[in-house]
Amino acid sequence: MEDIYISSYLAREFTREEAEELLNLAEEVLKWRSK
Image (cartoon, rainbow, N blue to C red):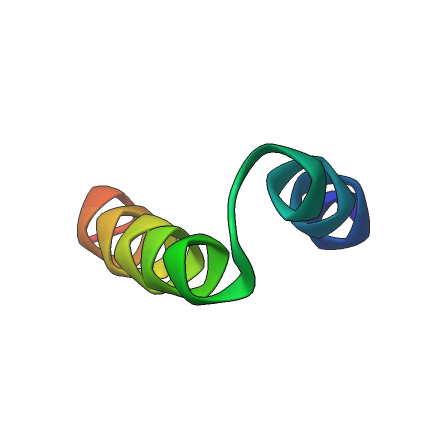
């Protein structure tokens, strides 16, 4: 899945905490868009 690619990209660009926050935010956005 592309989540692995996104996670590895975020791990390079951001700290772990920042990446986790962004991933959580992205998941919320995807849930909202899929409604």
